[in-house]
Image (cartoon, rainbow, N blue to C red):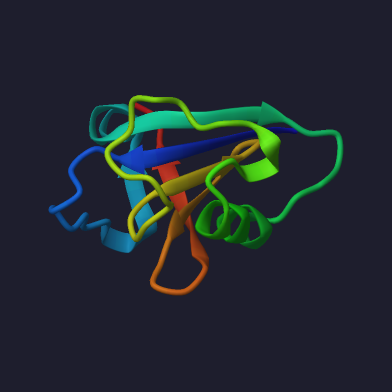
Length: 100
């Protein structure tokens, strides 16, 4: 199972996602891929959110150097397989990526 974490590029701008949807093009325009890994075990997005919230090197693997902030914040996206989750004030919520 492939897991990816995207950080929002603009730290001062609040992202607005209507109806829990964002386009594929907007994802790659507004976000930087900062971490990617393959897991054999099933992970839930809450566990990944906690690891990124608490540790500088989650799962023992460092984040990519190019990123707008150090810890996971409101508006960042976690991808687990084909499911996408956006970081909310506490935890995450599922969103839909619209393929263009």
